[in-house]
Amino acid sequence: MTECLFCAIAAGSVPSFDVFRDDSFVAFLDIRPVFKGHVLVAPRSHVVTLGDLVPVGPYFELVQRLAVAVETGLGAGGTFVAINNKVSQSVPHLHTHVVPRTKGDGLRGFFWPRTKYSSDDEATEYAGKVAAAL
Image 1 (tube, rainbow, N blue to C red):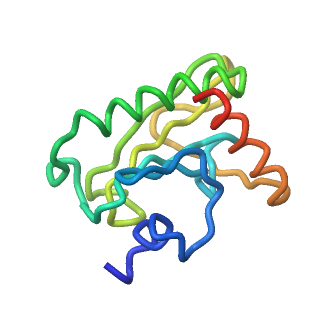
Image 2: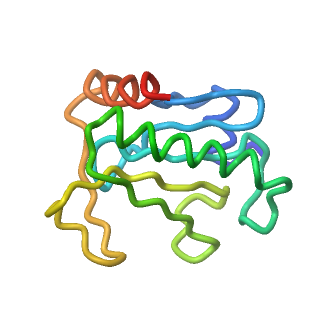
């Protein structure tokens, strides 16, 4: 699918700050993170919803590994892991958010304030920390 941003990232035609990449999945930093180190995990194949993904086991094994890696690599107190299925899905390609959390970080419910990386170097540093913890 040529119009899908995440398909283009998976194909390597759109740059991303990669944390993980194999034949089935990609994981990269969200360019508008809730908190720095916010990772998106997506299948390489174009599927829109969780119900479209078969099989789901390997995908969630990677999500689980990344939740641990984000916490370990960034020294976070925990993680918030979420999927939007159609509603609030800014890119119509299945993806899971893995967001680093710390006590008192200000995240309340489903209001997600967004921040930015100060530079590509800072984004690369965060991606490297999570990738190293995998």
